[in-house]
Length: 531
Ligand SMILES: Nc1ncnc2c1ncn2[C@@H]1O[C@H](COP(=O)(O)OP(=O)(O)OP(=O)(O)O)[C@@H](O)[C@H]1O
Image (tube, rainbow, N blue to C red):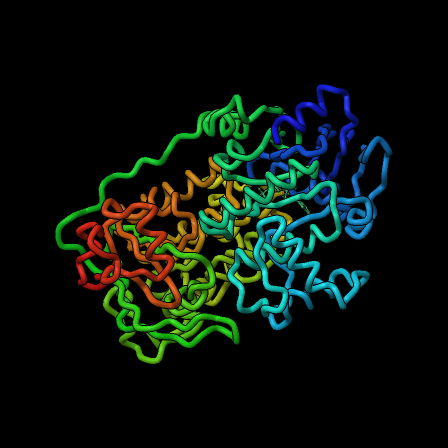
């Protein structure tokens, strides 16, 4: 893989794509500033950069979703104007998005037929089977999308992209939704494509993936190309340094308080029906999160995570009041605001729409989440916009939220910057109980460190912090105790130091303590549940 792209460059082979001074401005902000870079056939090219560095803006221009203000794209030696994604696809540029655009109730083949109406319907199922098998992406064209795991859904997107015989595939954080095993499989496929001469432009915040996969990296900072690197010569640390311009350290984690600790969030026999037709019901969940600790809930999305967050936050209420206690108060049948009034805070996974309203300014988003529960923002029947703006500024500074203007609309922030704002806004309330889903999803290494440190500090200050995350490295970095959510059931809660990645993998597959066998660590054999 490495060789093909390197040899192409050495022999003066024409680059597949050249960006020549691509520039995009949003008002006063230059999101991409005269960007130059090349992609050779067969190259896996990583695009790196902090949140807001301009990665998405750049690939949107390459995929025809945004028009450059200046500069041009040269494809196979010819300057081209890519006016729409359809034109990009016609040229041979495909894109696999982070959020899938599949119809759940339709089959794999029906979904693909809808996107590619020109392919013959009669032979489509066979074609899908053939392509998916030959690229190591096993898929049954007849299965209904709703029954597929997140990893399998991504395969549908990739196969759909491959059926268009692309010469360049753009992937935006493709592994953020995958299990470690699925990541390995995806890498096999990408290496195979690369050996066939297909180039891959790969956006990720996971630097270990760049080292494992890429043979070239372009690093953006504040809209400009600041470095190009050969990943074989780099380490995760040196790449992180190039991205942020300074050293990125691990977090400091003072030991959790031991001895008698006050239970601040208690779930008892919590059950909830599935969310929609394709959700996962929760059954009989017991869990206690004490003052001073971070509890991590590991597991692959689609195993009841949404239902779990909805139940704990009050988005959906439980059957009984006793099912959920916040600081000793029964709240199972009370809604979000009642729980927030008790000093709890919640950060949902889906930041736009759920965590923030796109068309509202950041300070207006502060008012929206605080007006019913926080005296500071709504005192004496009045909304205090100045206080909301102070909060917006404080959170912006503390979490380094990069904004194009003062108090911008939420929708103008890059994905990672919005995430920083939403998580920071809730930590800023100094909640006694914080429940956060995927706290650093899409966030760069420096910002992830800030958020994780803030979560640990909040806990050490006496709060109970519950983190739902698919990122096992993150869970191990911050959690004092860990449980796994699998098919709507929560495993026993284990001290973090008694678990390994492999053991968590087994728990994710639904193999619980009682079944884990002879070699289970002591904690696994401890059948005392959760608390
Ligand atoms: N439609 C828009 N209007 C105004 N500003 C925008 C718009 N889209 C992007 N921006 C700004 O352009 C800059 C670059 O954003 P972009 O989404 O390209 O960053 P990114 O590198 O992909 O970040 P992340 O890693 O967080 O996804 C950011 O400062 C963002 O706020």
